[in-house]
Length: 367
Ligand SMILES: Cc1ncc(COP(=O)(O)O)c(C=O)c1O
Image (cartoon, rainbow, N blue to C red; front, side, top):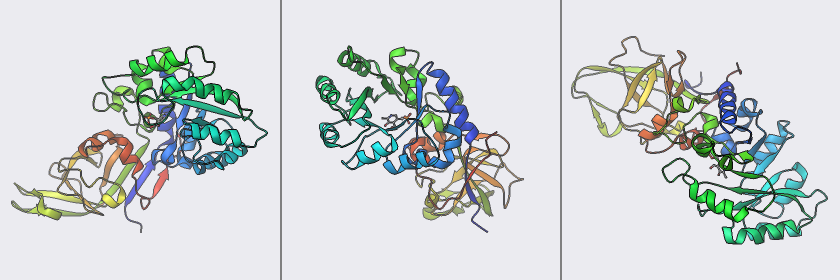
């Protein structure tokens, strides 16, 4: 028998979240961002739930090949563009649209031999200072691209650094608007947070939105808003079973470092999930879990293959009981990945991307 641990992908939730984001973005077209293997869900597994998108946005050329292999004939956008000249051959062959964020990428395009001119998204560094041309250099880059026979259409793109927080998007938006005022082409600016918090402004939602994290059922601005607030459903459940039960006496400790010590007699359960499965080791005593769909908490340190949970209030729980580490339990109760991530001092993105390869994954039939 395999170890009793399982990740479940919910295509129905992906579909729901996509439709919800589409509604929030009014008339904008939607890129489903599926980089990092669909944020750890698996591109092939997520595809059924996301194929109602207008396009797929990702980073790796091999991921683009996988999306084409699934039969997707629509737009695919490389969010970081090409990394070396020969990547352009694959762009030509697979009809990929690609971001252009630096002079070196324009140099490569200028030398590229193709009969099919490319659609490119020219990226502006409007304040995040990762990728893109500074606003004062943007027009020159556009003019250079526009003169290339290898390019047929130029769209305009930037990325917000603070759409999820108080600084918001106004300053970056103003820079982008000023620098692109009379340039033609479709525009794309918004990630999940910008869509959910700012897309009532038509300039923010623009022509294409690019949601990632919200598609997968994690709130982009937790804890200010939960997934319930945003009406998002978890697309991944991580569940395991109790493989042992212990009764602690007063003074008994749990796990490495004996960091939890019982102050009363209590039952605890040992779960077949540890940090080698992608559950964060840093999660302290008290991190929420669901046991048979009922809320409980972890106790002591997370080990490589096991963690321990409190069964004090759950007398019916025992060997074989189902434990939901995040996602949806069989009784419909939900433990948001954001809550667990917060206990680990991180965000839902990191937990879903860190699901370990050794965890078997099933895809629920879409309802
Ligand atoms: C350029 C770009 N667009 C869109 C996204 C999607 O962002 P989110 O997952 O916050 O919606 C990302 C992710 O980091 C990105 O890098």
